[in-house]
Each structure stands twice: as C-alpha cells, then as structure tokens.
Amino acid sequence: AVGALSREQRTAISAIGITNQRETTVAWDAITGKVLAEAIVWMDSRNRREMEATKESACGKLIVDRTGLLPSTYFSAGKMQWLLEHDELVK
Image (cartoon, rainbow, N blue to C red; front, side, top):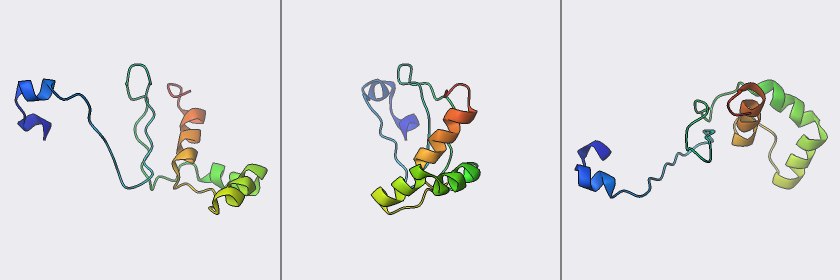
C-alpha cells in the first residue's frame, strides 16, 4: 500500500500500473491526466439500446464478421461511445 511507504519512497515512484479483469472503462484528459467521468464498470448496461441498434446495422454486421462477437453492453467501445454521446466533459 502506498500509505505504508516513507515520503522518500513515495517520491521515488515514477509510474503506477492499474489493471482489472473486465471491461471497465474510464475517460481521462490525455494532457492533465484528470479523470473526466466516473468509471463505467464491466456489467453496466446503460448503452443497451445503442447496442441493440448496432446489432442490426451494417456496422454491427462488420463487427460480427471481423471479430465473431455480437455488439454487447459488455465491451468497452460501446461504453466509450455512450460517454462521448452523453457526457459533456468527455465530448
């Protein structure tokens, strides 16, 4: 834990890796590093309508042809699409 490190040890840290095991999505400003919106976790389905429409579209058919996967609320691309369409800071 970072709190257990001395001040000297904390200032010597040059990078931290963050990982998860699912499709959680976060948008941040590439210049400032500031988070622009709360994370959308892997099981969030707020983009269900968009994904249902995508399944029926030419884009959805292309996704299936190229990946073998149906457009789904699970994947991070749809979550980022939702953020771009609904969150002013992310736009």
